[in-house]
Length: 462
Ligand SMILES: Nc1ncnc2c1ncn2[C@@H]1O[C@H](COP(=O)(O)OP(=O)(O)O)[C@@H](O)[C@H]1O
Ligand SMILES: C[C@@](O)(CCOP(=O)(O)OP(=O)(O)O)CC(=O)O
Image (cartoon, rainbow, N blue to C red; front, side, top):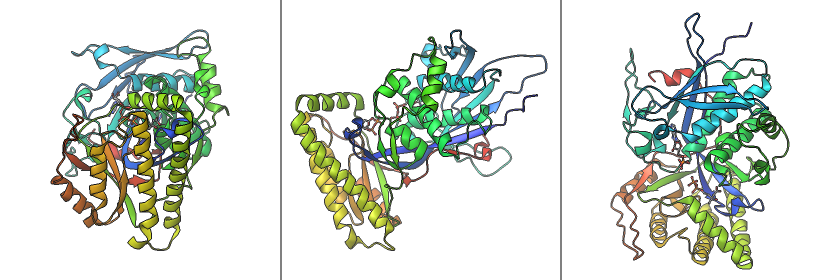
């Protein structure tokens, strides 16, 4: 007799790309990525079925948001095409098309197909799935939900809006979602001899499967640094060759299942994760500031890559200098982390490296016509860098108008000073028609750990 499936939960961290934006899209370069201590959790549980009733479906809920419920039917397809997943009507007002969640649907299709290839003669049991996210991913203020029979409110908050009305802070919600969702499904359906998150091979399988499904749902843009940090935590990340994924047949087409299993278990991946190369000195921390004004990463990426294509020698020169600066920054952080104690006088190398890198980023922005560190952000970063306890800061990831990340002394009074100073920070119009809005500090800091299994008690009340 099959052993009953046990409820399983997994979580993955948010990300910030501190150095190596754009360069990391090319395997010749890498990125310094820090994970952040805000997580997205997924809980998978068996469905209680009454004797004699045989339903087969998976219900996914994101209970912190209004109407965030997706119900799926699934079946195996002929010609080794894998498990196909169909969204069912959930019997309430919203239409299916309005409620589609491509990240969930794709992660489910890929994970169930992979699981089915490892357990070919077993029926995939119905399950019920909950997704819970930490506050920092959204700027909508969440409200505590009191626990039944207890005075302790849950750690997770009620956002009181629909997902489409939620304001993302840009911390990589879809990557943390897809990775924790995939990890929880693998942990729920597979016995530990087939998949174990605590082993290097378990992490490798999770990484490969989550990269494949996230890339498919996202339309194959992006270097995959966000999935790598969701799995491995803070690291120096070198991407996989795009050709690794391009040979995979589409889900539901002939041989998708075998091709996916070979891809996930095989050694085609040339991703390079260096965890030991990334450290945060004990006396320092990251602070993320949300700028109330958005930027569109895909458009910026297209323009920078087109500039590089058309101006190869200029671009190669800037990228070589920036790459050297990025490696030096990671090395200096690691060097300081190994010192028994650090004093502010020791941060002058870090300050210089940050300043030099910012100059090169502005040069790349001017040459490509992309506002990577636009004047509004230059002023904001320069202002923050004058505050006591701030070593320096950069525009993370693709840059633009939506966030900055600061490297600061890890003292409460330093963070309090940044918050206070930013309250009265005056934003001037730079004449480009874009005025950045309020700048707020996000309650978040770096963390080293990636995906992990969680205790179910965390989700009481949800
Ligand atoms: N808590 C959640 N529950 C379900 N889906 C979510 C949740 N948070 C994010 N998502 C999914 O991820 C998408 C946002 O992904 P993306 O645009 O990549 O944002 P980010 O910049 O945070 O990664 C949403 O449209 C939704 O499909
Ligand atoms: C340009 C990039 O190298 C970095 C983008 O980093 P962001 O953190 O800005 O990304 P999004 O969360 O997708 O908006 C593109 C990439 O590597 O995927």
